[in-house]
View 1: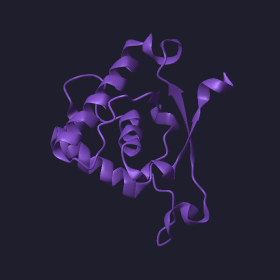
View 2: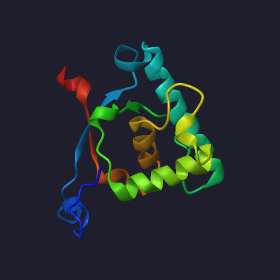
View 3: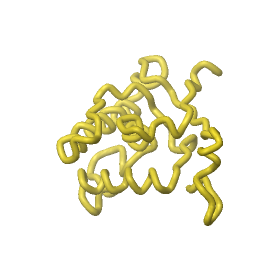
Length: 132
């Protein structure tokens, strides 16, 4: 959840340490042949598009090219809170109860949001398909 002990600065980011997060490229072989993963990508793109309409400081990077699985994600609490605020602005206070699959925000939504801001450099993303 949080990369730091209480009262300490975020996870030695000041010392150059950044968590490594694996992703899968949005190619047919790895993602696009699976209907659920296509929905995850589509929703991440639409979230960024809608977030940009509300707050123009969020880049409308609709060309999301990566899927991060929930079990691989690392969340920094400050960045997570910023993401959740943007999510609520777009989908409302009960935005985790979307009536369409995928349910609630996904790790792909989170990392797509970070990728559209200056916070993206806080993580190192690596293509996990290279190690299959």
